[in-house]
Image 1 (cartoon, helix red, strand yellow):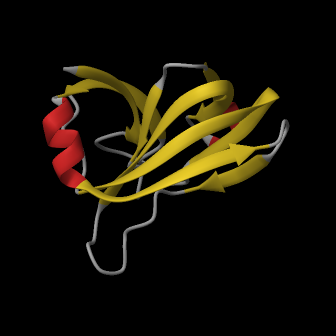
Image 2 (cartoon, one colour):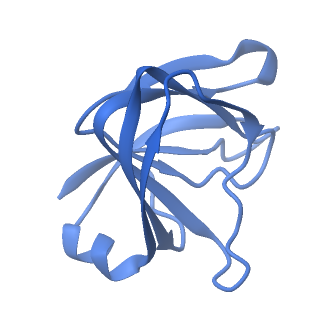
Length: 126
């Protein structure tokens, strides 16, 4: 089993983004992959609040980022009280917050080299 930190929506209320932990069998992860993209982003690149968009063909998806070098921060919670969590080398981070105000992100001071995998469906989080 591999551990994945998952950015998902709170189950009720305004659906603010939160980070939960889950595990997934590596074979299941590989079977669910719709697309894989290698990414290298410069230090400081940032995205304002946004959601994990559905795929036009497959519907709900989970975007899984595997960090190889450097890292990035994810900001979750109410828009006026965002909490920052940094993910460095070896981290697996899934994004499936498709409702509410979404999350923000910012590449760390060393940039980031990561692999993006788009998985069919949402992961199960406790």
